[in-house]
Image (cartoon, rainbow, N blue to C red):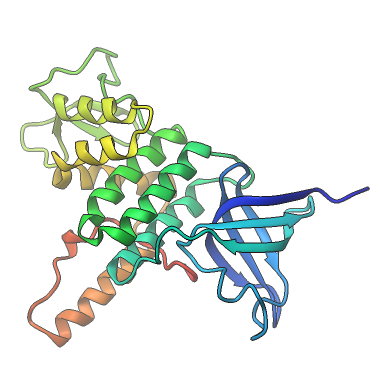
Length: 272
């Protein structure tokens, strides 16, 4: 029986780990096949053609064969388009990788989400000053596309349309509900509805990013809580990495970085 073969599939490397002395297993996010595990044989050898290509946060075209849980990588080419994010933007990109690793099942295609991820990575590489906006927009679209985000235009308990001037809080178990007066997680009904309207656009990433700008600080905590709940973690690995880096920076210099300036990131690109 002939092995299944897939050619020139748009992809990103999310994670990799040792398979043998010379080989790696890659967790790859592809546009048409979702998250796929591929073994890259001999990739750790100095002469391997894959060594300079199989990097995180780089748009690739990959080919593979096989129908087992772990397939065999046959080819990989860099698509070009942008350079790899650097500095804090690299850690933020690693956070996006960690979210996909935790929330996506293997072999479950999400074409629109792949396009959102491509846009997010490109913006992290080109607009490092917009990291938090990029992360918030991607978190919303990720949760929406995999069915974990409630309708942001209606009260989840009554199904009534939100009142623009009333404040609502997003609760991980019950969705949107009216907030207590001093609840720091609350946004106005108008802000929630603007986010929903942006996500409903045909090309939603940039509209969602702009909608996030109007409520960026207030949006961080409810999204973080929702993601922690669905991922089953108290802190993401990449966020801990960022906090550790900031702690070292504070130790070296009094001009410390503000931990709240960093979105909720958490995985390292090649070694989460």
